[in-house]
Image 1 (spheres, rainbow, N blue to C red):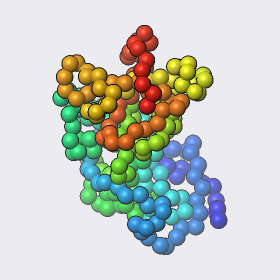
Image 2 (tube, helix red, strand yellow; image 1 turned 180 degrees about the vertical axis):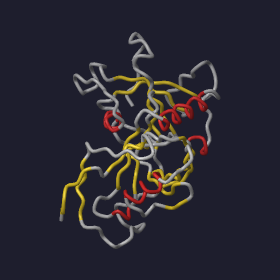
Image 3 (cartoon, rainbow, N blue to C red; image 1 turned 90 degrees about the vertical axis):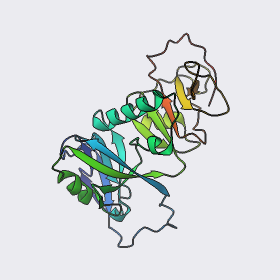
Length: 254
């Protein structure tokens, strides 16, 4: 049962604490039951830590408006330290030919990540206000976030530093929209090539076109209208559409 419609239930962390008043969230009566692993709303998550400067540039909200004990997740990344951190992480990976390991790939901060702890203080079962209180109480210019990422997901990194943890089979256009990336469409069938973008990805046995004559970083094109996320990649990087000429050959339809 919906009790009330209330503003300011998500936050854009651009300073110590700055609430967004333009987003509304329906709140229902809270359940006293704790989430369990067999609850269909619970997804298995891998845990990693990221240290980042303030302001964070993150937008967060409760994962389940009817039960704050399900915790808080990142739903957006604004231009700021989080986006710059992601760009720096990708640059570090690419500087070594795209060869990565689990620790480096987990250094990204992604939309859909759940905030598990703030400066070693657990908050995986805390509601929005409790997590905001933890972040607002930070007195230094850095914070260490313990993040939970959906197991088996792929980090999709956009050219502006925004990242999202994507599941296999999700549409590229849907992911771009979640990240605030504007994509132009015309036919929406993959024929007009309006929504084609270039993609960089680490080694896999198909569609290999080595970048720079070595290493394990490769490129191909995707259609945002009909293309869907493949399985088995740790990360994919969508290139700036203005950073590559339209005269390049269009191939591939992932």
